[in-house]
Length: 259
Image 1 (cartoon, rainbow, N blue to C red):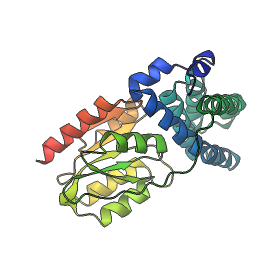
Image 2 (cartoon, rainbow, N blue to C red; image 1 turned 180 degrees about the horizontal axis):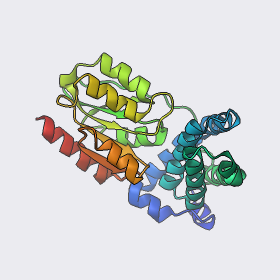
Image 3 (cartoon, rainbow, N blue to C red; image 1 turned 60 degrees about the vertical axis):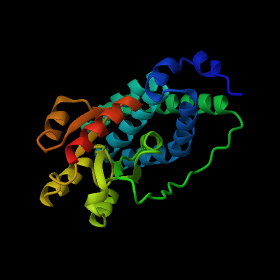
């Protein structure tokens, strides 16, 4: 049996995490999602910094910040946020100042979670979805396994949930989708390759806002970002970290608009 004291003794805000994730079963699933994904995120972070690609550096730091918040690692969340801001400012010297500390905090998080999860098998989970022809579909666009899997679990018995890892995948899905079956879209903004604003532009050019309700899910609460999002005819903006009731409320709001 997993010992939650391992988390508590290492300063993890378990109670704060449970306010968002709901229960320890979901927490444990989220831990495995994080451990499956973190090596790839770190590689992308290091590569973007090495290439002085601070725009994508900010995106990967933002993603690590979001993961840390969900799992209660507040110190890492704070340091990753500093790195995210440095990337957005295209300020390499600021990024250098706390980069090693962020890596140390990530390593501490990984080692703590591996001790906590114990002998639980950590393996890649293929995101295969069997669609129910009698159910409506929610498209979730986010580069985080944690977010996609969390939302998929919430709506497992009520909607088909189709996921896209970035904006490019989302646009590909929209190009081959029957819009009558698509109840709504939950769209992240900070993603590599094609970001959320580019998806919003695609929806605008193709006159899809009157057909598909769209809401934003984001960890970026800056005034400029939120105001820019609302220049598009979206339904709402949901800030991360969000809990099950938050997501259900915003989906209900979107679905009611389509009826």
